[in-house]
Length: 172
Image 1 (tube, rainbow, N blue to C red):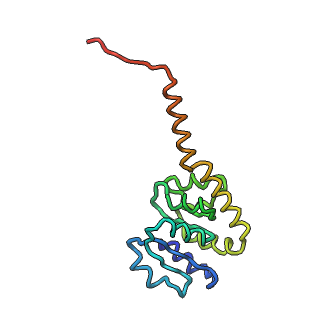
Image 2 (image 1 turned 180 degrees about the vertical axis):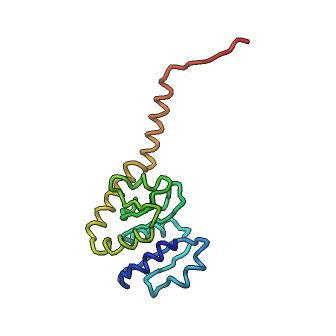
Image 3 (image 1 turned 30 degrees about the vertical axis):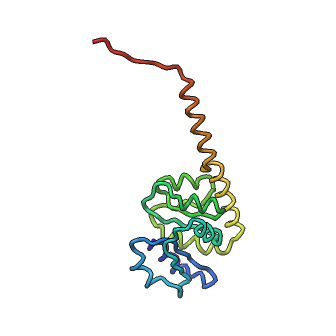
């Protein structure tokens, strides 16, 4: 989180750009006093209502996930489903999700400097943001939608059940 905040502050994007932080992590209370509205940073805190979280995502242009430890981020998949341009570190399965230009994959070394470099580029190229968002949405619909995963699971079970059964035994 602090890497993102530091990158945002150093990028000096102007007050027309806002960074919206959703969620309450353990570092919020120590970071919020140093990264506030004067830098265009809005701290919304934990949002339990899924519809409200989706509204917030749909009001954004870019989703940034600078985690250094992650499995497969549901927040990333939600952002992709909302058609946002997504940036995420190459940890867990997040890098795999964004492969083939479905988003921007950040290396785990130098995350802050990568974000700082990308922020003005994204701000200045709205067509690039839209293209990334379209690719992100397409990827999540094709590969991560519940119906597609259920179909793949049914196919897998069908394949397993169609295999001849082999039994091993022992004579003692």
